[in-house]
Length: 193
Ligand SMILES: O=P(O)(O)OC[C@H]1O[C@H](OP(=O)(O)OP(=O)(O)O)[C@H](O)[C@@H]1O
Ligand SMILES: O=c1[nH]c(=O)c2nc[nH]c2[nH]1
View 1 (cartoon, rainbow, N blue to C red):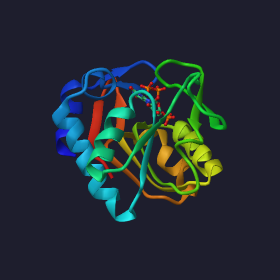
View 2: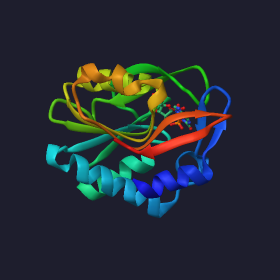
View 3: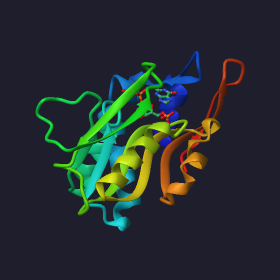
View 4: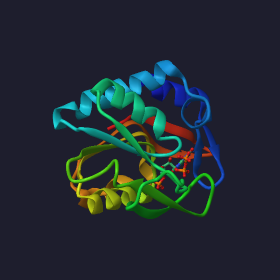
């Protein structure tokens, strides 16, 4: 997605620990025209798989996920990181490591909104180590839902998440790919894959 690649070139910053800051378009401020195009692009890509649900993780996955769900006309469910009193049991749960906040986080999705009737496409903001998506895929599996594909806005190729998720045997589509980044060389970003 060329507009996203351009925006990352303009706004992306490298932070310690191999973190790419794109707060101006993905993780804090959202740009409606970019978010809309993300949704349209994912929807075009995954529509042939005929999903009936989009699943993501709070908080930064919600915007691209709802943009995709709106185009496809299907519900979107997001895994919560703290279980609210309103959440109906049983809930599926797993743990992942938060890259931007540090530490282990719990993920929860109620069986009220995920189950054996669901054909799921997962949409998230970042594919880095793949740990978070692995945790979510495990929850989807336990729920009995079928995982059809994974879409991520930004892939950090140098963290090899795509390879680590290969055993899930589902298509992974990303919109921008960070091939490498370093203080010396800057951010090398290309169209997703
Ligand atoms: O492939 P991984 O190494 O697992 O990294 C990707 C995950 O890291 C971020 O979550 P984070 O908890 O940092 O952020 P968020 O609250 O902004 O969604 C991002 O939203 C992905 O879910
Ligand atoms: O804002 C972010 N920047 C990153 O580099 C990253 N990697 C995983 N999750 C991330 N979130």
